[in-house]
Length: 145
Image (cartoon, rainbow, N blue to C red; front, side, top):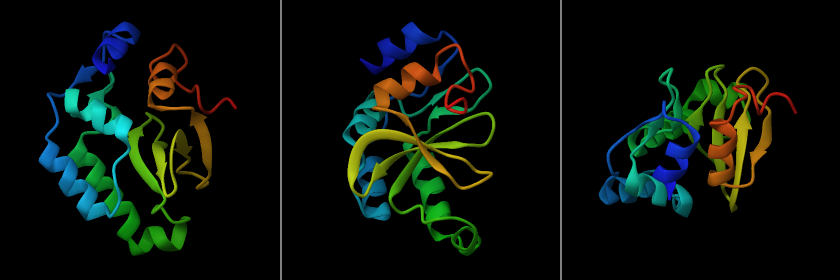
């Protein structure tokens, strides 16, 4: 489903090979919570998806683990931003904003974190909705609300 969806939306997205179940389990153990089912289903088919400019539409499992560990454990980030523990950062925009699922409590919605003002705003109903919006015609689709 995921590969067909992305292929129907953009010919320019580069998909990684299938993800590793062991790496997903390790990421869950390190981060201390289950990964969202939709993302796990995506990673089983493609361990990441990058747009024509190299930005992660969906990061690889390893990138997700690294970025979330960094954002959750950085003393500098703790002083500057609201906590990142409830979020699972998994995608990025060309402008520096990041996309995330809420993992505490777990819900299917996708939010955007604005790196300039630390706001977290709703962006999509689900991973599928996010992919449709993210790969649509408007590169700043989430910023116009």
